[in-house]
Amino acid sequence: MKTVLVVDDEKDIIQLIRYNLEREGFRVESALDGNAALLKANEVRPDVILLDIMLPGKDGYEVIKTLNQSDKTNSIPVIFLTAKSAEFDEVLGLELGADDYIVKPISPRKLISRIRAVLRRVDGMKADEQKNIDFGEVLIDRERYTVKIGGKEVFFPRKEFEVLYYLASHEGKVVTRDTLLSRVWGADAYVGDRTVDVHIRKIREKLGERSEMIETIKGVGYKFKAEG
Image (cartoon, rainbow, N blue to C red; front, side, top):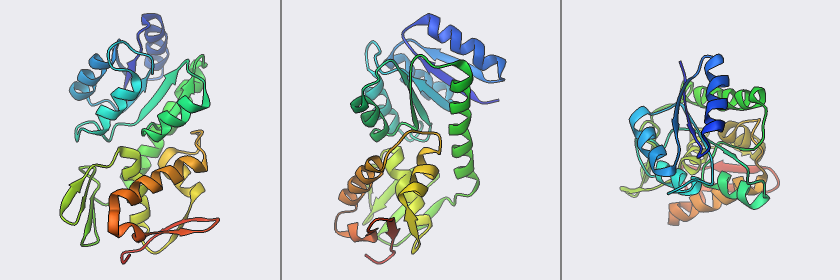
């Protein structure tokens, strides 16, 4: 049974979501503010988190940043469920590592469909993953979601990690932006090329002098090279 952590400061919304998810066989945990969400995420280790942005205490953006910084929670997929519909808010949420961004109101059927799509993508990645990718100066540990560069561990938020991991696991092959969008964010998530490019730029900054390991294939996508 998959567990969904629903984080919203409106009890009526939590009750509505709980009712519909439990009918579909999900286990539901809940939290009313950002601090409680972090405690619950560490305690329960849910399969996915539905996260409102406007919360008491820590807001949704702060929550996802904190989740990404912990080895215990950085692999949990997050779906923002919010009344904030501005493009800026959506882009920011996705760039912080959210798997999807859903604007309220949404029908229970569509919500469940989006949750299942995220879970399918995550399960698919786990099924064909290897735990470590070792290129000498760059070591990527899939199990722990950590990256060591030149022997030093460097923090990568979850989405940056998954982009790097996918490219590295297909070393020498050209990976299109559409493929990265589908494999990392899922076909049902509304994410544009700009989000992919922003993640690549941040990854290159962290790779430093090894940034040339990620080659841009103009008009197509990217290729990871073991030798930069």
